[in-house]
Image (cartoon, rainbow, N blue to C red; front, side, top):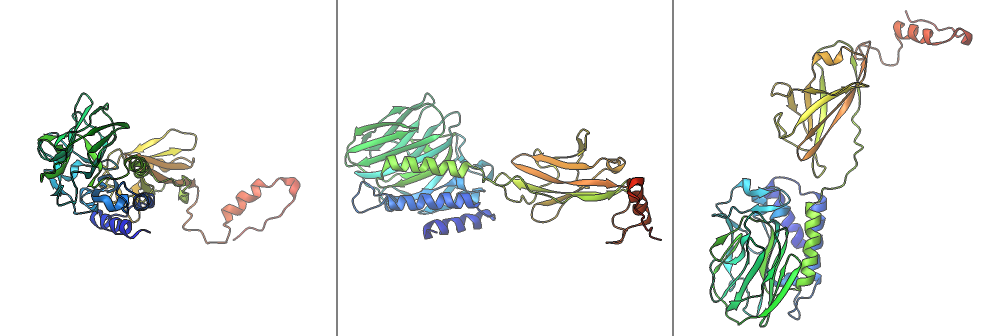
Length: 391
């Protein structure tokens, strides 16, 4: 594994207090290695060398994990709370006062008026994209990307207004690259270029805010740095996002052993297992979790939902939970199949086979008198088989 990717993954896991799924680890590793293998427009430097501040908020499971930087200094959230982190999407702005401080200026990040790059992947545009990324205010030496509600994307790079395009609202990459006097804009697949003068300012840099305008967009990824191979970077980010937003493929054939339950017994428990959307055992699920429902279905019958409460729901380990089953479920003879659902995951349950004897009271390997009699009744007279009964 790439050492930079490995260090980032470990830091995110420590911050999240959770394991980062393998498919996400692979996606991040491939992204970093791809950046290192791609030559930038600056001879002798890779795209990775040119990136000075880079973060993937959409890769983390919590706000703390989202603040970990893949490259450069950690982000500083301003007025952002844990509720503003959206799984698989990133950090959401509110258009009023929420933003991410990068902790540097273009000068301190090594950006130059003739050699700079900045970009943001918007997972969700919100209702008013506005200032997406860049300097705090406009004017000479600023660099920013502003996405208006009508879809018009405007920029500023160094001393003059940069290229602009029309890009309808929607998720996608917004980025500026500057080589010499030529500035190139990439906005959701639309591109434009313009010649811009070379002046560099010292404004503080932010994500989800620029030119005194806050955004309601959700930032999944951002970077600041020197110029990169923008067409290749756009393709690489598209692939990275698709992998980070996907759910890990897993086998749906998780067999949970069936149990024999003595008919008309009381106080029975059913053990179910809950998995998150990445196919990992889901810990800490409360009885009143969003969308959680458990039911049993008699063979040939209709599902019966179990009303959950703190008194009949118990967490065990590794995603296992026990639910107390109503005694009325075991008055029939049809096998019961347990199943369920939960928002953002899956629930898998066992089968309870209802029998007419106590399976826990029988001697293993020995037939009872009742069982021998039942076997004898099953044999036809033509078979003429004599069965010795057990006393």
